[in-house]
Amino acid sequence: MRVLQIFLYIVSFLYFCQLRGQDTFADNFQSVSYANSDGSELFLGNWTETGEGTNPSNGRMRIVGDRLRFQNLDTRYITRNLDLSPYNDVTLTLDYDRDVGDESMDVQLFNGSSFITIATISGTNSLSYDLAPAEISASSAIRFVATDGVWDGSNDRYYIDNVLFTAEIPDQPPLVVGSGNQVYCPGASMPVAQSITITDPDDTSTTAVYIQISGGYVNGEDLLTLTGSHPSITPTWDAVQGELTLQGPATYIEFEAAVLATEFSSSSASPSGIRQFSITVGEANYLPSTSHYYEFVSDPNISWTDAEIAASNRTYFGLQGYLATLTSQAEADFSGSQAQGVGWIGATDAAVEGEWRWVTGPEAGTQFWSGAAGGTELTFAFWNSGEPNDYPDNGIDGQENYAHITDPSVTSSPGSWNDLPNVTATSGAYSAQGYVVEYGGMVGDPPLNITATTTLNISLCNVITNKRITYRVNRN
Image (tube, rainbow, N blue to C red; front, side, top):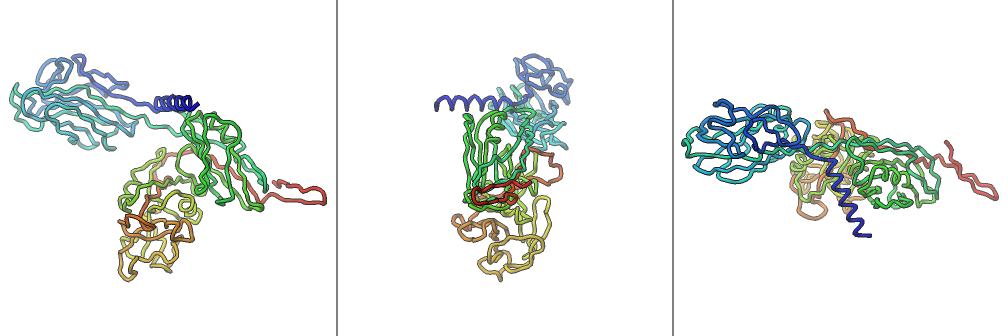
């Protein structure tokens, strides 16, 4: 059975990778033509020589022996264009060989405004280069140019071969639609969803689906359980996050069946309130009240400034990431107490001591607190008791200028905040363990519907008792 499970996982993984797929733009120079296109996609036109007559069989630049040859190049160069705008990850590889001479050549890419040198090649070897975002556009281009204009006739000669751009096809997000607005009575076990559909333009399967109690969660009482038989799916309950992971890989049809078979129960004799559930294809946690996604990234001892850059470089199905800006108690509770780690958030008073501002995300520039511990809350703040304190001496400005979620061992308010220096202690309760990334609300973010939300209302359950029978009544 174990061997079969591994085999099925490998097959699913390979199928998933095939669906993700790659496009290639390639020229192996196997014919004497500047129009060769040996990849899955076509270049935008042919190779074009500058300083020569663009003849692949004659001149200082030509195709010889299934390779692009350069001889006595001096200030001449050759260019080819390609459209990389549909992609977000592209790698260039090629082989080069200098059989005589001591000259070098520059490999250049167009970055939207000019050609920049990405490598200076010399001797015989291979090149691999990951394109920068500015080099991935509808006007992308590659060119080979001499590093100087003093090539020595036939005594300096280069060959280029196997020019290949490997472009990752971006993953298209799925569409998740669900319903469920039911009444829950104590002692019951009830499905969290009444209907669920998952559709995807480029996939029929995925690796995991996450069901989280994203509103009203009571740790130690509330529980999500997968019922029935689901051979391709393994459930894992995380009591800290209030989240049930349905781990595949499996088809969307199998995940839909598992979601419908997931039930909520409470061990409390008298639970109350409303439970809200988020059913998500993707690892980041979803908070319905903000329609944003949140993700803790483990990176021990990272500085706040490095974390800010790292968060801004992350994306989630096209949503731009940023250090989290927690502007309500619900958001602070969700990202703090229902998180696996202690990390940086997007607030600082580094610009003006005592003026705590959000400096990331849509709230960038918004001041939410004035002063030290016991100061003035201007919008919303959730400082731990005695914070911010600019430790060790509140009389000396600038010692602790960056906001960080407090380690649970030093607070009675899970998810509260502490001010720390940019570079923290390397261990203990006051060391950075990573950072919290928020996705959503940024200009240019695409619409995203990878989460369905449902509710169970406990407060609408009435218990009616007579001498013989106790009835639980769902009042709609």
